[in-house]
Length: 313
Image 1 (spheres, rainbow, N blue to C red):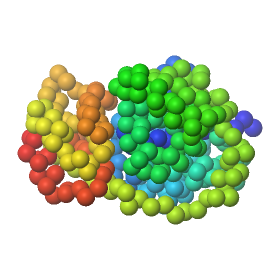
Image 2 (image 1 turned 90 degrees about the horizontal axis):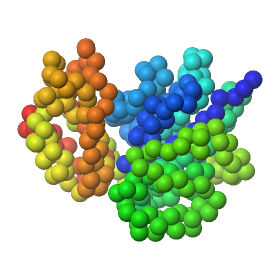
Image 3 (image 1 turned 180 degrees about the vertical axis):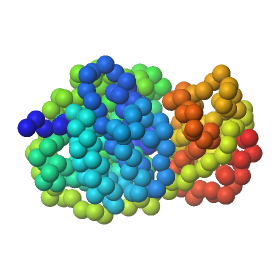
């Protein structure tokens, strides 16, 4: 029986993992891809952002795969395989999740029989590479597990910074393939079905594996409101406190109300001080039009931010 290949996509918060997943899902490769996305904590937004059909996407929101959600990862993988509709699996881990426990999860007997790990791809934000390494030891673990590094956002980092980052990457992972990208766009022939996963390293990780992982470095909260004024919501994003190092969500502008010309959701990303907005999926006819934002950081004053967001209407 032919085994279903699995690619695990990891990387720090805001590196561009979901953008890369969407690039894969919209590319012409002939694969029927199932997606499992792991959100940090019990709040999630990626199911609204990822361009997969509902039956091909499972979102894990009750913990990271290196802690409480590992059993859910096994269950979700089996569910997608049982549909008989997918011939490739993508697993996008949380930016705060270690990779090794997710890899070991696929040693479960039934999955071991039906699947095979193809590669571990680590998406790197070239502009914020050193800041991410400094902020979290998890970022280094993600990097050291990689078979392939997608050095993303090279256009924002500039050539001098990119050279500096590549030199440091080689120190940490001398044998990994490094591919430079903008907005996660790359030749998928170099990334899918490449068989780069190292079974030798896998064996060592299995010996080291444990369920202990400390997320004291961050917390996640979710905020919601109705339609918002474009200028006011931009000010809200610009004035987010520095303790929030990642934010993303769905923005419903007043122009996107039912009957308006603009019927597309607006996807919002904030990494460090950089704010980006882009069009996403169209609103469904029976879908509630609202703005949903997830904030990740430390010492977050949720009540104060809720009030500020409501004032954006």
